[in-house]
Image (cartoon, rainbow, N blue to C red; front, side, top):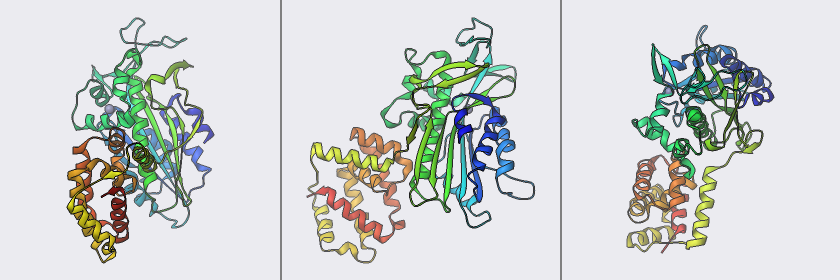
Length: 420
Ligand SMILES: [Zn+2]
């Protein structure tokens, strides 16, 4: 991945990045290669889609039908990763011949930003580095009119927008850091670069979601996954892009190892310069390789700390006492009975102590990884009853899909944690 690493933080032509992905991954010698591409639905992103097709897809992917190769694509407002996407895509590509040997899965996620050269002194422009003309970021002339790009990220920063902004906002506020506020604070982020930094942060956070998804569940075939957050610069001439970082998820062995190399997700830490009339973004994280974290284990750890500080959970409730008696008599080991007990326990816990229940169920792997941001918030604040109830209700609806052994383990865990 040496050549790919050299691209991190540097503005490059679109084709060059896709070709570098192709060259650098060839040495991995995968039996089969799959790809997922996530872009904004904005028509300006067509160029980015085509460059990935021509620079990577046509060389690396199996044929879908005669003379047709295609990545699994998500194009939506704001380039949001959709939970579960990597698993559906992996099912598809893993079925391509040959049946044996490892798969390579490339997941490329592009945020985007309009970028226009402007005369010196133009308001809200920046640059004028060496021989580079000043740039205005965040809007583009479109059909003869100035329009925001990315409009979705612009709406998020302005506190507007529909469901897409809620989704983007969840990611931007993950792990207790309000990155929208950081980006909007002129003392932390210069307004002239705000739109670019927002796109970097967004691609970075959406890539993290894809990584959580890959980390959480095995793919149908031993797979080495490469998740690449990028930002397209929609320019007057050919578009360019900045590769923001490289996540690798190595699932070729029994454990899935996650590593990251690249820009962090703190927009206030980014620095921008130019070299050879191209932008270069860096921060103090670039250049160091970091191990990916296991979010379920992190939540478990946080819960243990809470118990050490505040003591174990106590729950005095007659209905729970009856369930506890059943478990004590090993009733939950009878056919299907564990699921029945779980079905009875969840509404009680949702009523009297939903937050710890949602946290415990997530740490145990019973609540979907797509709730990671929400659970982090619940575990940090130890409040958010309505949200915890929604998560438990979703869990309740899926009890029938649990293996009986899994249901047994879960009900035992709940009885251990909630003391009479
Ligand atoms: Zn957009």
